[in-house]
Image (cartoon, rainbow, N blue to C red; front, side, top):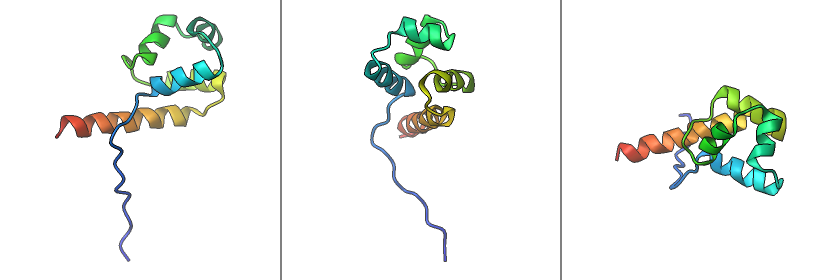
Length: 91
């Protein structure tokens, strides 16, 4: 029997910074407070929230330590976003 392939392709995908923004809003946490708790510069957080920087392992680890959302969640969101951008640019 042939292996089944997942053929679902989302029509739109959001940068992981969008999810981070929603989470910070849910927690009523400012970027300054998150900066202090995570040890990341405010500029890095703002760039991430605007989708101007990629989610890296280091950033994902810091998000996990503060938000208790696993690093692999954030890295997967970045991978899906990168795949989406690649598909859009190849059309």
